[in-house]
Length: 125
Image 1: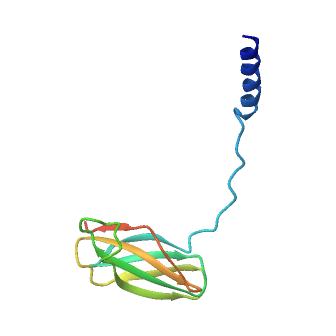
Image 2: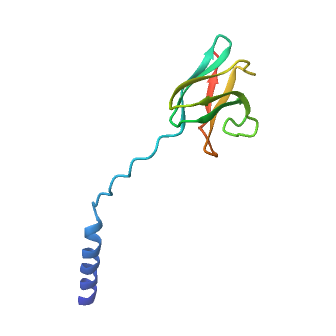
């Protein structure tokens, strides 16, 4: 019995210091290389206002009709391409959207690396 009480106290003393301990904050991360600021139908075409955070990057607007799987990348086609020489805002457009509900992503190529944004769905109202 005495050994059990001693064991419980030892376990209690080992567990107690870990309770309520706060983890240090995560270090700041780099922003995404490209972000979609806004994307919407305007006068029969889709206009994407983007923010590029890297210089000398090739940014491509990829799109497809919404279909069954909006997150699949298989059917994406190039809608517009632009070269961003310095970080800042830019505008890309799809002049001939195929449907009233479209899925768009941005792809950026910078120093041989490629990156793609999450899917954004645009619906004509």
